[in-house]
Length: 275
Image 1 (spheres, rainbow, N blue to C red):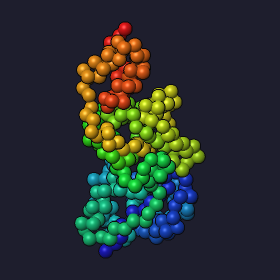
Image 2: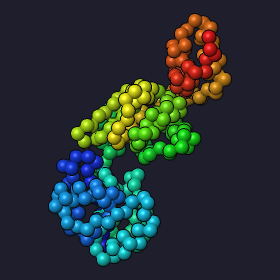
Image 3: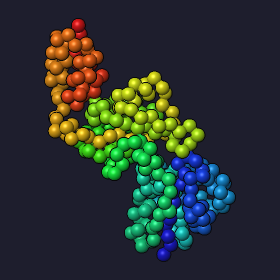
């Protein structure tokens, strides 16, 4: 039986590829690539002449049998747009089908954006939870965040530039103001690691337009946060108004209530009655 190689490819810098990966890509009979344009850049750079076929989210079901048929005749390499195939890309179905048909499936390890971001974040890396991309719809996104709100593990996820600020707002509302590292354009010329809090990141990327590819690393739930239930809207409103009646400034009141309630400062701020 032939072998399906899961080959890790650079997430930015073309030099981040192993000698074994270059050899395997040159020796297999076919490369199934999530992005043929990115694959072409890589193969031309390393003078690899192996034929490349597209295998991406839009054609993965119709192309599955074609790729499996090619695998019957020789070894194939699967590569994603960047990083390790099988993580947040269409490789899963092909991998499962190849295993079920008795083919050998092996990995040629390489770069991985989630792991790279995790070790650069400065947050605990001994135990973490990889979430992939958050859902696009706010209701679904908030439900996904609610499902992991009490988990103590560091969270690692991807986000697109046009949804970044909305996701940060939802994180602040559901997870609270946790530490976060936002990694942009990893290993590329304009690599940037922004470290701070979720509220600080929201404010920063409200004024600085998000550009490039983002990997987010978010601190896990603290033990005291797990024991303290999230307040309902009326509790937040009552606490804000009580502090305001004591002469506490609205912004300071919002900060105090946010620390206790599980709501973000901006949400608590808007729930206070107008003076």
